[in-house]
Image 1 (cartoon, rainbow, N blue to C red):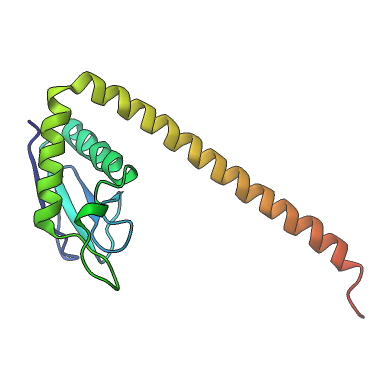
Image 2 (cartoon, rainbow, N blue to C red; image 1 turned 135 degrees about the horizontal axis):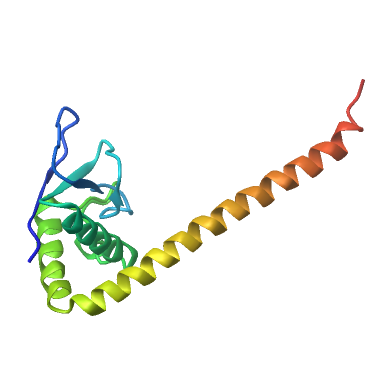
Amino acid sequence: MKSFLIKTHRPEGNYSKPHFFILSKGLNSGKPLDSPCPNCFICITENQADKDFMYWLCFGLWRSKSFHYYLKGSVIPFITIDDIKKLIHESETKASTNEQAFEKSIQALKLLDVNEKKLKLTLKMIDTARQAIFSEVMKDTKPK
């Protein structure tokens, strides 16, 4: 069992132990974040290894849309702190009992995340190239 604490993030809070943030509102509720936002919880752990474990556990739960079942609200969906604690605690227990399979899954998630970032950068560069090509063509056709 990993030692962790989940509570509502306060902007004036000062956290010395390893921690990460979890989005609490919108369709991306449950998404782990490195920096805080106005609508988030904080997960505080005892050490860096536990933080990494919990971060990637939340990332996997978020990617598999496991948090969607717990969303409430019709206009802006949100997840309650009790629901997120319950889901993360149950999932942490399952992941800890089969840690080898969990680690293998985490490595695959990390690899996919890196590849996704590379593809997004490539698409951004392609879009920039398209704009540059089109602006070059349009430069000659501008009225003087």
